[in-house]
Amino acid sequence: MDVKHVLTRTMVASFILLMGVVAKAEVKLPAFFANGMVMQRQSHANLWGTARVNKLVIVTTGWNGKQYRTKADASGKWKLAVPTPAAGGPYTISFNDGEVATLNDILIGEVWLCSGQSNMEMPMKGFKNQPVEGSNMDILKSRNPNLRLFTVKRHSSFLPEEDVSGQWQEATPQSVAEFSATAYYFGRLVQEMLHVPVGLIVAAWGGSAAEAWMTADMLKAFPDAKIPQSEADIKSKNRTPTVLYNGMLHPLIGLTIKGVIWYQGEDNCNRAQTYADMFTTLIKGWRAAWNQGDFPFYYCQIAPYDYGLITQEGQPAINSAYLREAQAKVEFRVPNSGMAVLLDAGLRTGIHPRKKEIAGERLALLALSKTYGFEGVSGDSPYYDGLTVQGDTAMVHFGRAPMWITCKGGFESKLFTVAGSDKVFHPAKAWVVRSKIYVKSEEVPHPVAVRYAFENYVDGDLYGGNGLPVSSFRTDDW
Image (cartoon, rainbow, N blue to C red; front, side, top):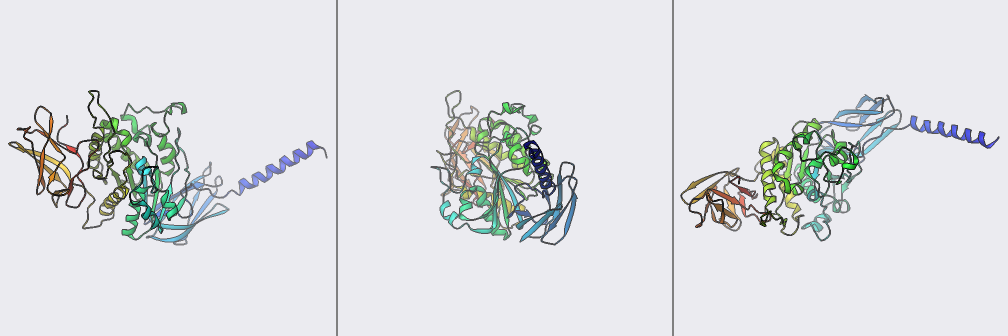
């Protein structure tokens, strides 16, 4: 037999073998449908993947032993929803298109998506020279088989992707050390209070712009957002519009979740004037894409930090105060949302505050009180709700302050300024009278406007009776 004939027979045999492998190819699933995952309880939870073309796919759920059938399309894609029970597990799920694939150690509980930029991404072990306060002991005590963690690997893409890189891990000191601190503290408290499994999926990238987490359609109303028309237009992997939505969020859309927590805004400080509208559009856009109704969306107001920005006139710029102001507007525009105020949890010389437990637990308070119906507690901070003037004294009114207002260390705040019609602000004496703050300055006999903590960096000293801080605010629109 000559060499040519041998090669021909070898190629034919290889082709037959390859076709056999393809014919027996079992169901393939996205990375987040995997051993150890958490599925949303008491829902119709979506599952999808690929199988052999035009073949019947049978899904068997271990919690009830029932089978659910669907058919793969001409490209091999399939999708269906299965009813999930009350919290429990571990269970198995099997997928059969002629070959059987089985997932093990599946828990049924609460699933939350956690997204944003570096203050969501920052792991429990901290960044170099930037620790997370108290995390070492919390990592040590973190083992919890009912808390499951999934981190989406950073990925920027010009086109929408179909899958992500990542894996489910049980909460252990090793896995928790590498996991988002804000998300961990959120999930730890939710799991502790609900006594059910909790799954956390983190899709975050440090320094990312809000625009990067949006689609071109969402950004139509924002002409300054330059939508890339080709790969060559991607100037930044984490700031170019649409690229993180495509690379990290699009694959997750349709995954049945309870809600979203979000910590982002620092990158948008230099364009705060568009943020309230943009963030509102982002939330509505995500909800529309998920087609799961107005799921809960809770977010952190960015913490104070000295950005070192200077105006054209050579004065310190207060861009972050304007950004915080924009964020504060959104919870009143968007149903089923809430903002965790961090005015007392910043760091003058670092954009990554150490107090991540405060951030995560204030987000959890919002979820526990608003979503899960815990009574007797509140996750809402009081907010500025009006100004009246009597002579030389301005009186600031607050909403959501049933237990009135208090100041750190007493009844006087050191963080108020007041201005007259000349628009020049002067430090003011400010004191609490029940649910109001009285503000006065000898330099301003006829007050017109009041500002509280309206700076880049500040350590907030005004609280509600529930111990949650009041956001920085201004009564003017100058």
